[in-house]
Structures are given as structure tokens and as C-alpha cells.
Image (cartoon, rainbow, N blue to C red; front, side):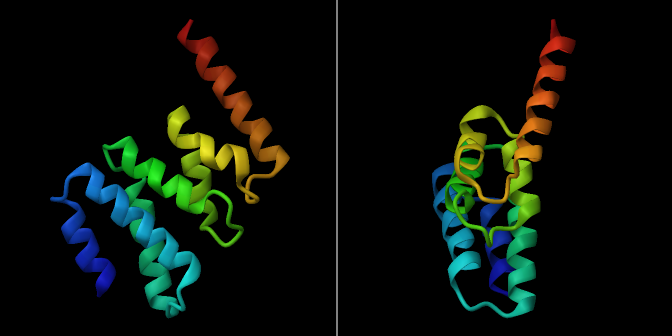
Length: 117
């Protein structure tokens, strides 16, 4: 229920407030004793926040999740492919990104660069 209210609010809030609330949501996911339903709802909300138009929001999510092995893997991997200032926290410190993941990300980036030139 709280996550549903959060998602309703986040649609109308300014970017700075969305970033603060996103960070709080991620920390609650990592450090609070959530029920399995609330945990799934929080993860779903974080997945939705990956599409937020503001890099501030996505960067807040990346910073909150970057160093924790209990972060949702799908969210961390998506953040790793975001624009550089969003991706940097997870690329430089996430225990969820294995060497193979990083090599794959580099290959994809090289492919994107070569296609653009």
C-alpha cells in the first residue's frame, strides 16, 4: 500500500524530491524488515523508476544500491547501462556486477560507439 502511494506521489513531485524519496525507498528495501509482498512492490517501484526522466532520480537509486549485495540484480544491471553519471556508482562498486558483466558492458559500449561513427 505504501509503495502504491509512493508511485502516485512520484508522478507529480519535483525531481529533487523524487530523488530523495527514491533513495529512501532503496534504503528501505535494503535495510528494513519488509514482508515479501512489500519487498516485491518496492522492487517493482525501483524498476519503474529506471524510466524516470531525471538523471537525479536514477543517480540516487544507483548510489543507494551500488555497494549492497542484496540490491535487486535487475535494477543494478539496468543502472549500469544508463548514462555515465548514473552508471558510475554501480560500475565502480557493485558486488553484483561480475567481471563477465563488465566485459559485456564494454563490448556493448564499443559497439554503440562504432555504429555511431
